[in-house]
Image 1 (tube, helix red, strand yellow):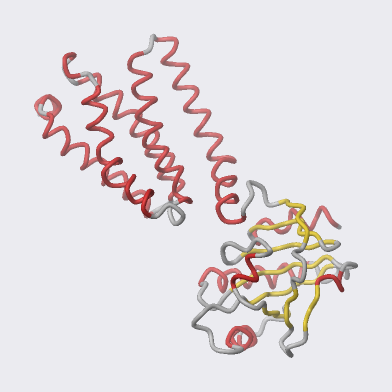
Image 2: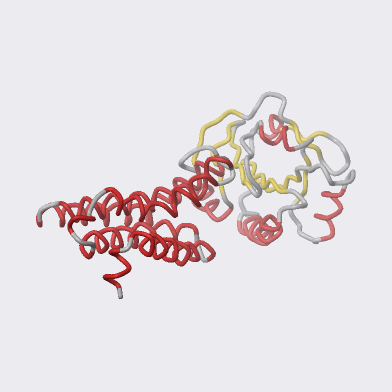
Length: 283
């Protein structure tokens, strides 16, 4: 049965698509898991299919059939929605990387088979330990690492609930933690307890101050963000910025994003889960 399918290019193509959609279901669990899984699985599939197919059919057609689902389904989505799909780019590369390594392992001598296998294993270990975090930071926060040394944009002023300006230049003697959020961001609300816990943990350090910063979006009514945050009963003070464009001047690309500002310089831009490591260095 398997031999019949592999010998028939049409049936082989259907099998390739069926396997592709099965593997793609992993994306619903974790995009990072998909990037690892598709690299390993497509490497094994490519090697296995080349081994099982008749010698006269071990050619570019075999590789093309294995690659077809990715080229037809995934690649156009990434081209048409480039910015929106950047976060899942490692998964796309994972498919092609698996196919390339599968071909290299199949056609190499025994020694090189182990060498290619070791290389792909090392690459996957690196991606699991560090690679995905580096890529996520680059997409979400504009740099591969959360530690930065950027100046606060000139004229960047936030507003207090009473409408009075809050200038970061007037607080150069303190370390300022700003958590940027908006009313349409579910993750922001999920992270507010973490902000409150960080606030409570560092209250003994008089030189650290915490603020939530609401960034109004188009559908917000005047003062909506302020009212929403007050209703949540957190003890963290809420500030507001003019709009999304103004927030982007400070490198705010996604919500939530946390900034740590020291002596009028942004020294941290990232997720609140990484905030402790930054603040501990400053104490």
